[in-house]
Image (cartoon, rainbow, N blue to C red; front, top):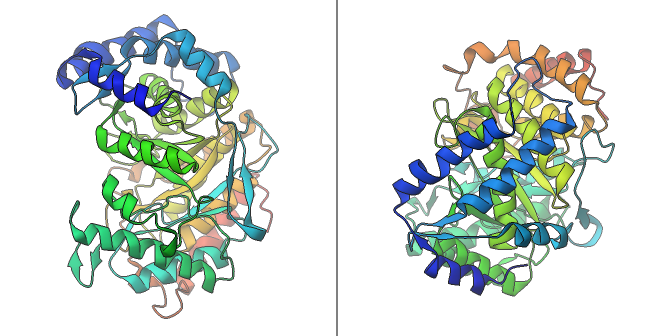
Length: 459
């Protein structure tokens, strides 16, 4: 692992360049060149490619990209540079697992390979979507732990407010909100009878390094066996706030994730460039943060979701590239266009997770309704998504491709104008968190559709 002091030194003394010049004169042109150089081609007929050569070409292009353009530090306006030999050595000696959870819930997060029969890591829950009050937070997290027995870890919501006052970043409200997120999450898991489950998004409410640090005291309930995420900024960037988190978390010796959302249609270009960039981000997390796992969530620049044909291909191609060529566990996270209590949201989850899991990734259940609206989430969506991901282990890529191509027509035309769905308050019991009959009817209908296409659910 490259010491965080060395990363900081490079950020302070690397090649100076304005951010807009890095984006438009360094990063974007090099991505376009690499797409042509390696002959990488998006094929809508093969949304789950079965060409190992394609995956390996994407990985080689990603190595070239990060060696040629480096990682941009926004605070110093300089490039953190890496040599190819250094990059390859770091990949060979990087962490290849993470121990998470306590007691009977302790598990080891391991890397997977395409078509592996090993079950994916199921990181299930809210995906960091915001909720309006603490009662909904508690009801949701408790329901995740109860209703998703295959969950290896929980992802909690974020709090919108503290005592009715909207949280503002870098204020005492953010500090208090971060502490409450931890306390509430741990209490909800205790109520569900699964107190050992790891919370892998640690402090979802924390937007700043100081807020993260404030919630780390063991009195509040976080443990070394929980998961800790550090963002990587689009595209191939970081800043001192994020490096501060890395410095703190490395000193605490906890499992760190590099998390990133490359933008399809932005500086990364189309599907091919977004796949290369996603793979380079995986490498960036290992190099800059010492990540023991990574999380990718590509975003469509127009639709701000990830279920378009191009991004399903990206999910599969990137997953194959990193799972075939590195030993660091890779997780895939999605943003659905549709909201809760709709057929479309479950169909989106099915298509994306079948593609990703058959390609070697594990999963975090993603942001429903683009993750944009507070309280637009229920236990049904992560429950269904987890079950689909779990059932997709061992699926041949050719079979996955055919299944995905049959699911996509059910929702593709509605991505530009998706159904928003219903808020938690409209379709769940506020006292128990139990979803309505309508939610279960939709769940059962879509689950039967997926079964009829060849997915064998475990229960």
